[in-house]
Amino acid sequence: MRLSRSLIPTLKEVPAEAQIASHRLMLRAGLVRQTAAGIYAWLPAGLRVLNNIADIVRTEQDAAGAQEVLMPTIQPATLWQESGRYEDYGREMLRIRDRHERDLLYGPTNEEMITDLYRQSIRSYKELPQIAYHIQWKFRDEVRPRFGVMRGREFLMKDAYSFDMDYAGAVVSYRRMMLAYMRTFQRLGVKAIPMVADTGPIGGELSHEFIILAPTGESQVFYDAAFEEVDYSAANFDIANPDDLARFFETMTTHYAATDEKHDLEAWDKVSPDRRREGRGIEVGHIFYFGTKYSAAMNFAVTGADGQKINPEMGSYGIGVSRMVGALIEASHDEAGIIWPDSVAPFKAGILNLKQGDATTDAVCETLYGNLRAVALYDDRSERAGVKFADADLMGHPWQIVVGPRGAASGQVELKRRATGERVELSVEDALSRIGVTNA
Ligand code: P5A
Image (cartoon, rainbow, N blue to C red; front, side, top):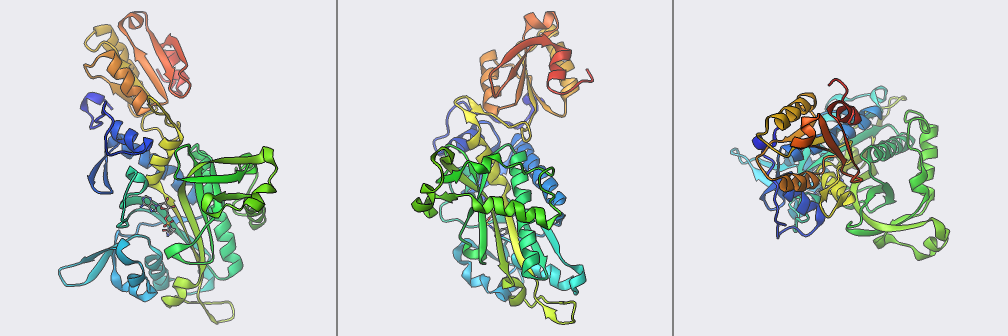
């Protein structure tokens, strides 16, 4: 993209309403704009990050054997009356009435709707187990939306739902999703720790939340260094193999991990001092096993092997996709701005033209841009060099290709790695191959 023709409104001033780094940086880097309390519009650069995260989440869900669907944002109240949650959910639910006086709601989660879809079509034990997921906007009328997209009212969630014939099967599904989550977070370039959690309005008896480490996180977390040493890859755990999943789950649940609310000093004392890790954390995912809570309440039964009717055992599994954008920034930024991990960066590289209008400089920039069109943001504005440097650091491109008139005359550019600050002078061809594009 050409910055001069993009809706990427960077700000020099620090917005007064933003209390935490990620919120300030998301506004300053022009990723989002608030349109109402806790509701955000995603501008081009922000949307690219959101889509990159969603793609990684999707790949790992698919690899775990989950199938993608897309349920609507608007749901009929009748489904929630069946489960009993219509009243229970309280004022966090945004209730709507249509022209025929029918009660609707903007979905805060989809347990009821997915149960309804399965009960309409699935009749026999032979069709289970199954896992379905979607990546869809949710609405929760939070009392105090804050910290930008971290606690929004409208937010993007990946939510998956598993259906099994018995408890043993449900446990396998739960472990499978947990492993898919650890792989997802690893690919997103963050350290994530699963912690035993309360089940709240989703219900059920088994639940883990996934906390990623960031110095400015909301809660204090305590964990055993063992979590950082696990190899979550397919080489170590086959996600299709229940024995591997059992070994994985054992590793995840035997080592100590707790947030400050559940911190147990006695158990902590038993962790050897050199293995104790402490830090701040942000909840980015939450998984639940709740048995037949919804299938029983909503009369979803399938025929078992012996002809008897059985309510499937269910679980649900959420990742806060839009919250993840903020969480990644909390985990990776400095004084100057965002430092995007390569896997999610909106643009792999920024091309900085230090003398817009100078024929040689423009020509070198156009050559670079011609090769990097899909992955680069070309700063072709007629701004001072200082402004372009500051904005590139703020926006956090993993690579900056700086093109000035002197270097351009001899075909040289400067390549800067945002994460380390390392700079090298090299030819256009070498710059392209260093950032992984070789068809110059
Ligand atoms: C699991 C999937 C559920 O809703 N039902 C379907 C279950 N779980 S949850 O913990 O309530 O939410 C899952 C994840 O969504 C993110 N999240 C939010 N993100 C931004 N703003 C919010 N107000 C918000 N509320 C929840 C979190 O990442 C959470 O882990």
